[in-house]
Length: 142
Image (cartoon, rainbow, N blue to C red; front, side, top):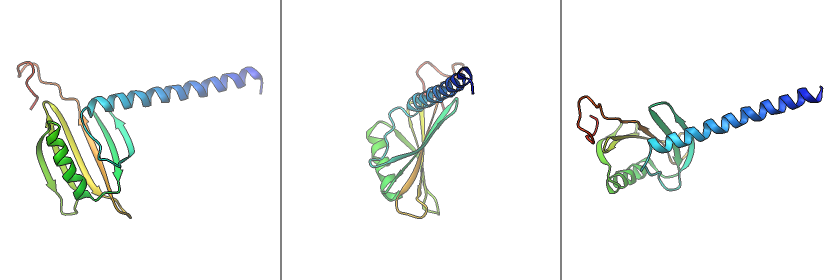
């Protein structure tokens, strides 16, 4: 393979890697904005992070049981200015919590890990911009 072709191939691979790094950085920044002020349960490990135009999701796992993680979130949300709007325990033992801080929504779903102890849980945050035609400035979206 001629050197110029090899160099072009290397530059193409490096450029693609830089684009992926740039995309990953943008996803992390966007996720940070959507989940601003949200705490992760101690001892949690990140499973995945994803973001779209209006929402971001982070999936985490911890060795702690669902009921303990959910109880911690109920307390942590209240202590950090979140209003608990919905808290449902499903028949299968999973839990769904919805909270809001001003206009910022937060959905938390918690499930027991499959095949082992602990919990896998998802935090979803979204862009919540007030409808300028129907609300006064500073009023939360409904």
